[in-house]
Amino acid sequence: MLRITDLRKSYGDHEVLKGVNLSVAKGKMVFIIGPSGSGKSSLLRCCNRLEDANAGTILVDGEDITAAKADLNRIRQNIGMVFQHFNLYRHLSVLSNVTLALRKVQKLSRQQADERGLEALAKVGLSDKSQAYPDQLSGGQQQRVGIARSLALRPKIVLFDEPTSALDPELVGEVLKVMRALKEDGMTMVVVSHEMSFARAAADHVVFMDAGLIVEQGHPEQLFGAPTQPRTQAFLANLSTHSRQNALTNTAV
Image (cartoon, rainbow, N blue to C red; front, side):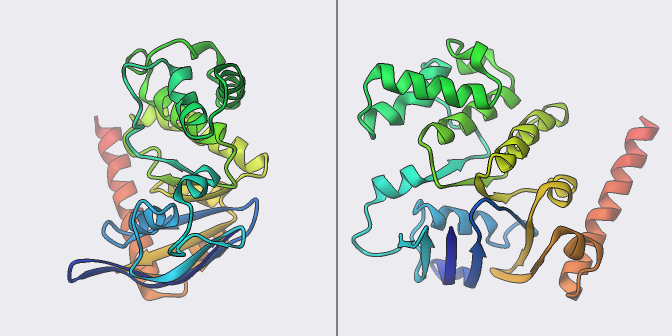
């Protein structure tokens, strides 16, 4: 479904992607992990052309989306994007947020758009919130609206850029539950996230990036349980130490 070949991206003199190669099979959930500044979010943004790569190719379902004459409007309908900070329009209802692109880009009638929007909201467990406004929802509910907005376009693949990092810890689970359900329905997903336990439990494949390169990748049990590269080992060891320190702090409190 997704094939990335020798992808390079620079901001001025700073090269953030240094020749990334990655393949994602249809219906699979691939997690990308790594330290801040490793190029994870830039990679996702190149995959739906929010950023233009300097070199390399990206194929989505066999189509080269990096081609000079690529139709960006059509491409972005096939590639859903879920952002860290929801990006909902506060003055629009939940249903209107979900259906806006259906009406403005796909030119569906309001009735057609509303039917598809309600279908998408049902998939994320928010059928009863269709007429609410974003400020009336919790952060987890707002992120689920963001997911529904992507699903309403019926994309071939959905990209998640830190979908839970802006949420309070008790709200994270409801978003991860939706993502697991999407995986079970066969949606192809690429997820940038620090939710390591979820990655280990739900991902089909995990990619570790550092300094603009893929250092190591493999099945979650292999990568988390027996990483082969020293940089991966150090990163996971630091995470484990940090988690233990947080647990001790929470116990003390």
